Picture 1 (cartoon, one colour):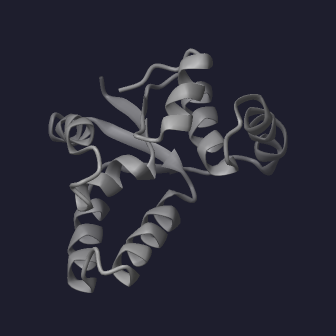
Picture 2 (cartoon, helix red, strand yellow):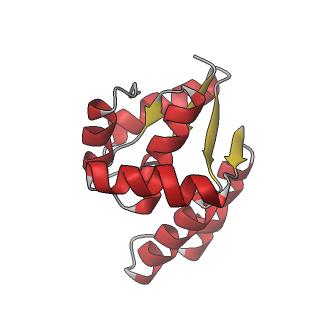
Length: 137
């Protein structure tokens, strides 16, 4: 497997090891074996936002955030910028169809559009992926 979609919940669990470390470790191994990920354009903002919330809640230090972001920056992760028409049509439909947030629906739409498996730890997104016949890692 060369390319896959990875959501923020998966990479954030590398930084917060009490959250599904085993499943996320498998994704980390994919990168080590030459895999590459594609993510929605907002992905970096979502990751940073969660890290800053973790810092505010004293789960992570500013120096660990910096180190973690430096590590993420070297991973082969490509941002996918989709046309607003996709957001207002297909992603909107997926939100209603599966009860997802627009952000989670964007991961599902990207995996569907690119025909790629999805790495997520989000229960709602796992459920929706199964219903939409999107392969999960």
